[in-house]
Image (cartoon, rainbow, N blue to C red; front, side, top):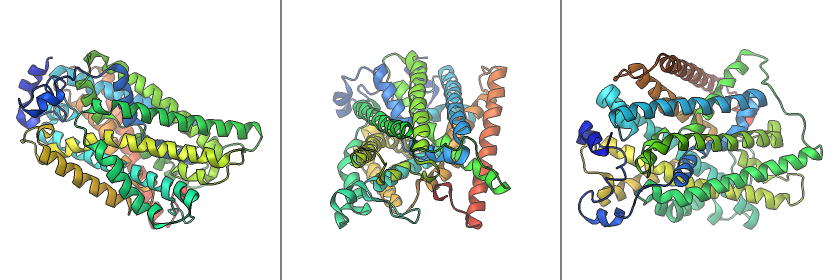
Length: 461
């Protein structure tokens, strides 16, 4: 279905969360036309890097800690399973999008469940993305300024280089990062404008993985690494509940559904979206498996919820200090470059919630600027008060992320407003909902149990 047909199908109140590539050209007949006139569609590599950047964010830092909770074998199996379920949910989402010509995730939800369905999706994206970006800032603060969230201070890179000063404290470092890095990147109005920063960010993630794997292999050859825990230890019922606390982290690690439509809308060839999703998931799964395996192998039961904080100590190999700094700095820069991709979707969804009948955000510079400034301020303040990324992941993963990734696509399939779902699709949808709801309810219960019984989180074990 063409873009024109899609516009007829969805009236003004259901405007796509991101204008399609055709509508960028001359949307208001004013200044935006000149700005976007030469945009002829995003390339396959650019789309792969943008989607991969959406996926590989802060979640990778908590994955080694999930190996500590689940054990190496179940943990790696769960990473692969989460990737397959993510692929299946995106396939279901895009299939229903094609039938009605829906230009956004919100439009598909609106088609299946009406106004409230669209609004519920937007609320979940806002909650998830705010939580994820707070995690980004926490990690950047941990890396550059150190952390004491587990009772013991782990020195940051700037502290190690220059000592402890007011200007390399967490508040000032995050303030400078927000003003000098996040603000300029957050001002881009088109996803494809971020394809170059996305390429660099994926490359930096690969650098992190390669260095971590190299250190672990060297120590393994030298016999400096003990046998890792292959399966979880479950001596009592509380330990069983604790296993489920890893599920929200795994769910959060693959959430990218809110950016699939914006990337699809900007493609030169819209039929490329399926191989783009497959390529991105394969690339990110490889990065996740490698990081989880070697990160847990390297630090074992000392693995923290943010594995980057483990790199402040002597690794027991030549050039340990330089390699540790390279790992931490490369990933801190990676997160800085990932930030605008997640922020882009956050801003568009929040705008859809608050100003659903207003003109497109990209053509209203005042609204665009105010919303950007307010969101950055909220994220910055929150990152200075939330102590641990495990806490943030538990909340977003067990609530908004699981809805975006699995429950909503499955619910659309079961609703099947256009009678296109096959029997296997509905069986898969039921499986995803049952698995998602059950595991995350238990995870929330386990967290509450740990809090009330003053039991340490996995990162503090």
